[in-house]
Image (tube, rainbow, N blue to C red; front, side, top):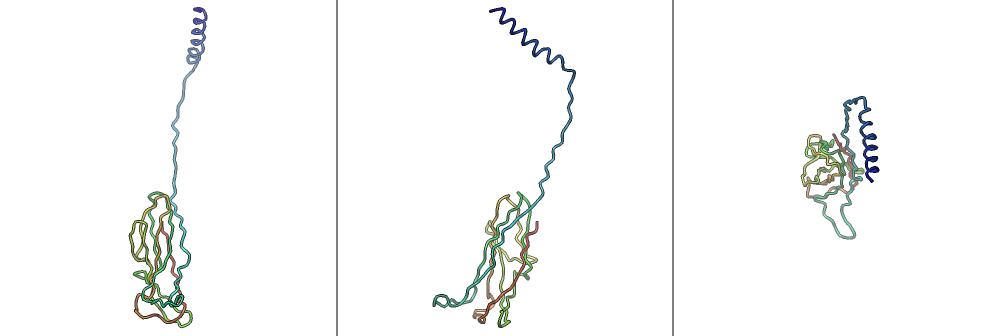
Length: 167
């Protein structure tokens, strides 16, 4: 038994002791690791905003101030600053023109962010936020006929405004 134990100890010493002693040296070198995360954003804009005003199913609907809208879903890198603007006039004013009569009616576009902040959306008034790395909702709203308590002329009123996501 002593002979077996002694043989095992000698074998271990030979295996580990001589293997380490046979090493001629070691070298080391620093390795720099760099990860560049480019800032980016994507968004999913709402479909076109449509109003159906006037008589609906036999019940008259007064056309004072009506609003409609939809949601933008904005996804930017974590802490990536961004702004949302439009080419509307100050206060978010957009002039809608009747396709038949050529008459105009004012509409105003505005936003509500996912924190409850609100404001007009124009070339000088914007939503400013920072990305969370996940989709953030921005409700896009339009108030129609805010200037007059009277109903506008019967027509289909249209306007186009561009909305921009800047990052």
